[in-house]
Image (cartoon, rainbow, N blue to C red; front, side, top):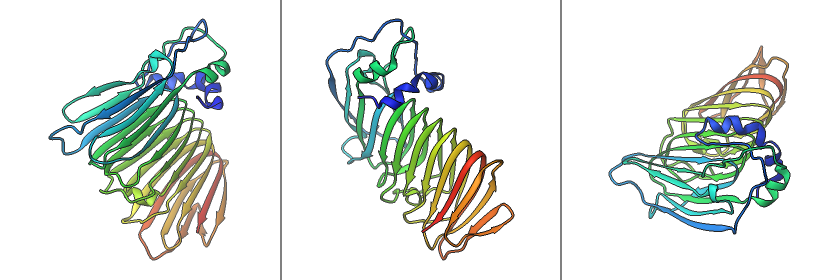
Length: 291
C-alpha cells in the first residue's frame, strides 16, 4: 500500500517527477484497480560492459534495494494492482533502465482514498558489479541498503519522500561522486564513510535530513550541502577530522562534542582522514554531532 502521507503531497510533486521521465495527468474519476500482480524480475548482467549504467525510474509507492549475487544484475519482484504501474525494462549494450509504467490521470480525485487502494511495490537485489547507479523517484518510501556493492557513481533524485539509505558495509570500489537531490522529505543517510567517495553533493528542500558518516573512512572527502528551510543533522565518528564551512542565513547551529568555532568555521581534530563540509542553508537548524 502507498504511505498515506506521501499521497497527500503527491499532487505537489507531479511537476518534479515529470522531469524524471514520468507522465502524470490528473484524473476526472476514480482509478479502477485490478487484482494485485506479483511480477518476477530478473535481468542479466550486460556482456562486455566494464561498468554498467543502471537506472530506476519510480513514480510513487514503496521501493527497496539491497545487495544480491552475481547471477543477475537485478533480481526481485514488482507488485502492483494498476496496469499502468507495470514495469518497463529498457536495455542497451552497457546499461539497463527500469521505469514504472505511466500513471495517466485526468482530474482531482480523493488522493487519500486512492492511497488506500493502489499498490506499487518494488523489491530488488543488485549484483556487486561495477556500476553507475541512478534512482529517480517521486513521492515514495525508499529503503536502500547499498553496502557491499561496487558503485562507481551514485545519483538519487526524489520528490516528497521518506528515505533511509545505508552503506552498512564498504563500497567495493572508490566512488567518484555521490549526488542526492530531494524535495520536502525525511531522509536518513547512514554509513556514509563506507560509500568511499571523494565528493558528495546534497540538495534538499524543506525537511529533516540526517547524514551519518559512520563506517570506515578510506580517504579525505568533500561534502557540499545546499538546503532551504530544513533541519540537518551531521554525525561524525570519533577519530575523524572535520571542518565545516557554514553559511546559514537565519539558521541555528547546535554542537555536540569537542567542536571548535572560528567565525563560521567549525572544526574537530581526529587521527583519521578529514571530512570537509561546505554548507549553505536558507533557514532552519544545523546539528553537528561527534560521537
